[in-house]
Amino acid sequence: MNPSWMRALFIGSVITGSTLFAALPSVAGEETIGSVKNAAGKTFVVRGGGEIPAAAGFKLHLGDTLETGPDGRLGVILRDDSLISLGPSSRVAIEKFLFSPAEGKLGLTTRILRGTMAYLSGLIGRLAPESATFVTPVATIGVRGTRFAIKVPE
Amino acid sequence: METLRSLAVAMVAPALLLASCAAPRPSADALRPETTVVLLPDADGKVGRIIVANQAGSRTLDRAETATSIHDAQTAPAEPAPMAAAEIATTFGDALAAQPPRPLHFVLYFEQGSAELTATSRGELKAVVRAVHDRRSVDTSVVGHSDTAGDARMNLGLSLQRAIAVAALLSAEGIPPEALEITSHGEANLLVPTGDNVSEPRNRCVEVTVR
Image (cartoon, rainbow over all chains, first blue to last red; front, side, top):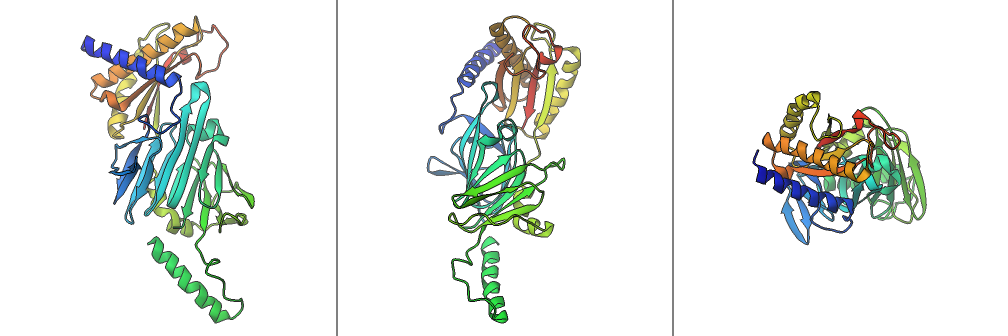
């Protein structure tokens, strides 16, 4: 193993570590909050007003909106191990993601704008059930550690 | 698909009403498609609870495969009712099929006061590497922990060193560093709860979550 590479990794990690201890992520930003695991048909992420094609391995940021075309399907895993998947013609925004279990800072707010979505709770749903919320144009869904599916018409 | 189905419902519903001549023709608003939420069991068959609420009222779903529908924000969610498996498959089949497999968890253990893996855990590294490759994971977390023996600050440093040691071993096996997220909890988030100053081998560990 290359010692200078090790040192770089060590310093890098110390910086990453200290950022995380400060538990900053609560505004849209560069922080990875999860990744795309599977994608079929037309799938993309709306970020900063632009559309980015979202294939497997794409890293998600806070504030991203997941979107699928009429032939699209998309599955993602968030950092708290939540599983979120979309059927065709769907649009789902991840508006809040706070995952800092050591400090007890936990929160997930997802907005389902249209289409179909399935969800399986991760650690946020298990450790702080009151803090996982799904918002639709007609109602809000609170989750107590579980799996559900939802359809929101156009 | 979605539009076609809604269209089919919109076309069939008035036809049925006309045929029966029973009810007055519903307004276009009443025919507007509804938002539907269905509670499902997880892979282990466990069923949780969801609460669907708006300004007009709230409903709790706590039985598997029961659903409520919501017409608009000014109308309370409908009384929960069972949803047939076939209807769940028709409506949510694509979204459910796209659900990724659950992440894999590994716990690797360390010698007392050191960032040296135990012999057993060294042997388990190969399984971790295989999981990262098999899952094509770009987001694997490596979280360091310590027991409560000694100073809390020292333990925070030690748990970070442990996480870094595991990340270095994984990188040496060809896993790109950008796929690894390194954090440490020190003695703040014990896997096995103990009091302070307790030497507990099961807390001298690194958790690896392969997503």
